[in-house]
Length: 62
Image (tube, rainbow, N blue to C red; front, top):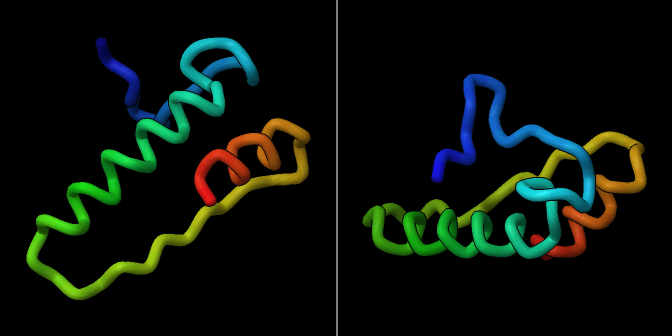
């Protein structure tokens, strides 16, 4: 299944793939890659706008 397009993961909030569960799974996958990449850089910036869905996704990632 392909999640990422040329503009990232897109869709309507609370409908696949823009759900808290998918955000959590993608976040865990990114963390796993960062741990195994061999670098000591372990900071992640979560950017969002003011739509309510942004807060849902931010909460899933933090």
